[in-house]
Image (cartoon, rainbow, N blue to C red):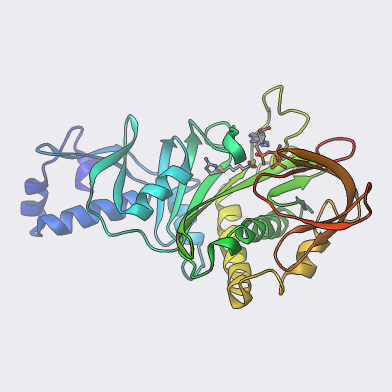
Length: 340
Ligand code: ATP
Ligand code: BTN
């Protein structure tokens, strides 16, 4: 590639002349290279500069392993971003996002086409990874999966929270397919192995009263991390810690995409969990177990009876003996003795 031969910038005009193509063709070629994991700095009046070739494990390998219909097409790779959810939000709104030596750069104007469903962003590191309700998602660089993708489902906004359950089902299937490790889902959005959290999901939505504009689905999977911060040590684990060997992240990503498409299709058929309830409840860590429901203004204990077709967790309250349907959102569910 021409940029590899050059330490500094090569102007767009130079590239047009050398390859006998238009400026638009050069710009498109740069975009394609970026989606393949090349970090290219683009500066007005100076041209293009190759900053870094793709990470061998993730970028080109992931692109080759994807066998999905729409998931991961296109896929963008980043060395470092604040949060991959934020990247997908920008792409969904039509901003152009590129990688620079300083991290991510967002072009000021809305000038690219709005990203399409399935667009995926993967980062080696997140400087401000987000969990639910303003919490942080932590993780080392280059060993885990931090990824987000864009959905544009034609569903009612009130049904969107069920997508979190779909994300968790896909995570469970991918982990099992690649590693053989049986994981369980802690309602609504955590994946747990041996009582510890291995994977978290965060969905964010842009919607009006009766229309979803888009949904950002973010997944963090602890893959090859060996040590966790003291406050996470008892609660978090990784695939490699559980297996005693490293796992290729690209395999997990590709398996995730396949599984997600399968479950998403079933969800869209009914716009609820009715085709998936049974499978979900089979992998529910809280099934038939004592739980403590933590609502913002209210706390109570009960026995979890699994989800209903709306994805709500049915809980028989210890105090009133009533069965109540708990909606995700502002609620946390804990085991009686700890996290699960
Ligand atoms: P709930 O969603 O039921 O409230 P939770 O405590 O897991 O459960 P979340 O908001 O889902 O809360 O997840 C964010 C929390 O996950 C953080 O507060 C932190 O405790 C934990 N966490 C952060 N990074 C990781 C990680 N890499 N692996 C596992 N857990 C993590
Ligand atoms: C949780 O368990 O609270 C959700 C954690 C979600 C973490 C992922 S990592 C990729 C994506 N980007 C983010 O900032 N968060 C999600």
